[in-house]
Structures are given as C-alpha cells and as structure tokens.
Length: 557
Image (cartoon, rainbow, N blue to C red; front, side):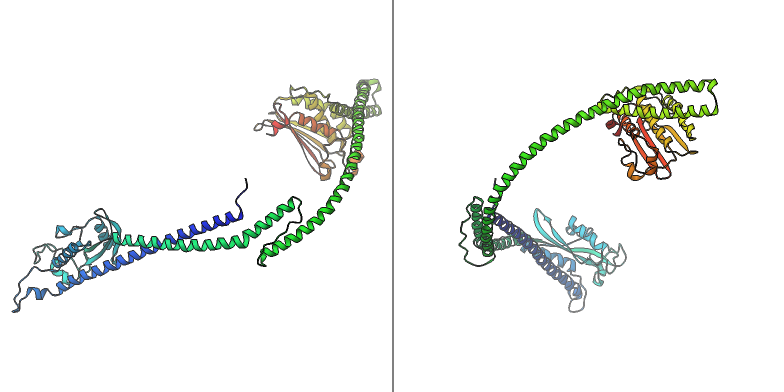
C-alpha cells in the first residue's frame, strides 16, 4: 500500500501545528486569566480588610468621645470596636454575597469561632509573625469561593480590654487574656464568591481561543494553498515525467512552470538528466549485446574447465586413497620385522657371552634407533588409518599410571642413550578415567619422544599428571628445556608434516606427524591440547582430558 503523499503530509503537519498552537494558546490564556482573577480578588479583599480595620481603628480612637458627655462625665455606651466591626460585617454580609467576619480559635463571642480554614490561617500567622495574609480558593457551604484572611494583632488601644493581669475583669465583664502588644488575637476573614468571575473568565477564554483558531486556520489555509501551487503541483509533474521515463518514453515534455525558481531549476536539470540517460541507455544496449555474447562464451569455457576440474578431483581422490593404502601396507610390513629386531636386541642384551662395553653400547644404539623408527612407523600407520576412516576408537576404564609407566619403560632407554633426565610425577588424586588406552599411550609417547628429541644432553624432561576436582579433568604436562618453538611455528605445529623452519628443527628431522596425532586423539576424547614455548628456553605441552568421556563440544561447554 502506498504511503501518504507530500500534500497529505504537509496537511497533517499543518493540522498538527494548528492543534499544538491552539493547545499552547489555551493553556496560556487559562493561566493568565487565573492569575488575573486571583490578583483582582486579592486586591478587593485587601481593600475590604483595610476598610474594616479603619472602622475598627476609628471606633478605638474615639472611645473618649463616645463614652464622655459634653460636661466631661464618663458613661460607658458599650459601643466598643469589636461590636462595631461585627455590626459593619453583618450589614455588609446581608447586602452582598461576601462574608466578612472576625474569627479566633478561642473567641469571647461564640459567633466568632474560627472554622478549619481560619484555624489553619491562625496557626500560620502564629508560626510566621511576618506573614500578612493567608489566601486561596476553597469550598464554602458547597460553593467555590476565594478566602482571604489577615491577622489581627494587639496594639496599645487593645490593652484596656485584653492586656493587664490575666483573669481580671474588663469593662465589658470579660476576663482579660493578659496579652501584650504584638500578640495575635484573631483574624479578619473575608469570603468572596467566584462564580461570576469564573463565568467571565471562561467566556473570555472561549472567545480568545476561537479567535486564535480562526486566525491560525486562515494562515494555515493560505500556507497550504501556496505550498500546493508552488511545490506539490510542480513536483507532481516531475513525478509524472519520471514515470514516463521509467516506462521507456524519453520524450515526455515538462512545462507549466510559471516562475523561474528552485523547482524550475530542478525541472531543467531533470530534463537534462533524462537526455543524458537516453544517450547512456542507447549505448548500454549495444554493450549489453556484446557482453551477453562474451558471457555466453565464458560460461561455455567455464563448463569445460569444470569438467576438467572434476576429473582432476576424482584423480586426486583416487591417488589419496592409493597413498593411504600404500602407507598402511608399507607401515604394516615394516612394523613386523622391526618388532622382531627389537625383540632380538632385547635377547642379545640378556646374553652374557656377548656382553662387553662396545657390544652393550651398540645394542643400546640399535634398540634406541629401533624404538624411534617404530614410533615413526606407528605414526604413519595411524595417520593412514585416520585418512581412510578406519581408525578404531574403543573407550575403556584406564589407569593413567599404568599407561605412563609403560611409556616410561619404552622411553627410558632413549633418554638414557641421549643422557637426558626423564622425571615423571603422578599425583595420588588422579582417578581412573574413560579413554582409549592405545590412543592415550600414543599421545604420551609422542609428547615425551618429541621432548627428548629436542632436549640437549644433561638437561631434563619433566612429565606431570594432575587432577582438577572442580572441573573433573585430568591434565598431562610435558616440559622440556630444549630449543623452543617460535611464535610463527606454534600456529602450525599441530598440523600434519609441520616440523618448524628453524635450523635446529631441521637438524633433528622427523615426519611432523606426532603432534598432529596428539591433537586429533585429544579432540577424539573431548579434550584440549595447548602449547607454551619460548625460543632457547624450552616448551611445555599440556593435554586436558575429561574424567568421563565426552565429545569435544560437551567438554567446552
């Protein structure tokens, strides 16, 4: 489904702008009118409060005129300031919707008892002596009103009735409170209705909002018409022309632009571009024909080469199978007589009639060379079996100590002949493990044989077998103090026929199969092999095997 066009998007954007502007204008008007109404109510309440306090002060200041006659005789008329204030308030209340009263939490007259709002104001005035007014919107007898409350504090004229000693009787017969100048005595409470003001405010807001809406809609309409005439219609013409070009009609005219503006420049560039595209298209058609013919010839040649490559691959597979069969047969045929030679040498070493220093040395040399040659033949044979997929893998419960001891018996003569110390240590915690005993023995033989081969006379090869109870793995470490392996050679040392490029590596020879077999057999057991080596300081190979047989994937998890 096609999305909104440019005209619809502009219309939606303008509508959103109008709605947003009207919302901002409405919020601003409501806030401004509320502030204005509040200021007007405060001003009125302040004036009423000042008028009430002026009447109170007038009566207080003229008590002598009220209570003394023309002959100077005193006669208390009971026309005191409190009575006058209450009377004026009551008269005002009857004539208007306003409520003006004097209130206190503990008044002398029960009619002046403060309500909850007035008590809150009284407490606020007591806590803050600088507070001059307490105001706000509230509910009063079910109607929305504005309440303004001002403090009444004791001055010198009030001390006659409310000062002196607490408990004394004043001229009105009430017990004096013992107040002092500045003490809070009560409050002037003014309650003003807000219904008319709110109605006027709402009417004003509605009128202003409608006026703003009309102005905004008119402006937006003009903008929309201008955008349609100057932008969207010319772009629609360009879109139509582009559609004509997409269908292969290159001669579509673009006209109707009344003013030379950016859209006109865009249309001119578009016409120029279409002319260039037509020229390129005509040239491209010719190139496509020639390239298609060349591609057809290339595909034909590729098919021929693919047939040749397939035949070559088939031949390589056959040759690889022949190589594996050949290595297997040759290794097997060489292994049988070599095993017999090793047995005969062992018998000759036990014959006392032939015992002599020279004979013993020759027999040791012969036994060592035979063992080394047998190990290489075994590696060739195992590699051939692996390539042919005929390698057997039989998991049994194996005592690693027995396997290491058997390898030690075979490697000890080689170590002695090279005058290299062979130190083997097996931790007592090493348990029985599930493994292929033949593959395990081949791994250890190749690691120790490789270490002995590259260790100089008088140095030592260390073999350590340990157990990690947390991960349930057995670790075999073989360390030598030989020539070491460079960082470049370490990356490929476990690959087949990899022997290293250093002169020392070439000097010691070897087929480069032993470590590749170690890696393959280790992974077949679900383990890992690692190498740490420094040139001139020796090498350390580590094989980690799970105590219980697992695949390599399970071991890594």
